[in-house]
Length: 186
Image (cartoon, rainbow, N blue to C red; front, side):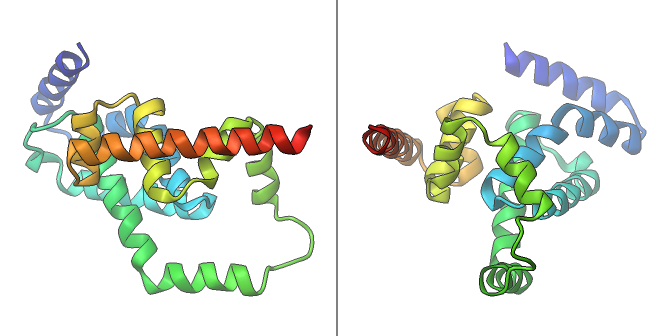
């Protein structure tokens, strides 16, 4: 059913010749998903903002090269993942992250951190954010974005078996965290 909706959406987009209008539609439809995915990978608001902006610039540039081999959502989330991985590999990212670790800007928590803590009130979300990236992203794509194993495999560039394995281990780690949390609360 979702693929039918995506196909209709793509037909609508293809009929329009105004790339800016198409981009605006895509940003409205997927902007929040892109930002949330980027944030879950980086855990930093400003980096999620930068990555989201770069994703939609890339989408704009490659709009007419979309081959419809996957859903629009899968295509955009794949671009988001690739941009996030590239961003994390960059020297700038490593330097900023290292500087945040070595010399925090002040002794009081940053406004960003306060807001993040307020948003991450849910214990489950905090546990997900503690997982290693490979488990965090598979859980997020499966549970939050409700993508199929095949779509997740396509986004991550791995086999469906690897996705299933990572999902199994992510759930196992979540259960262990929950168990540790309950034992610590007693």
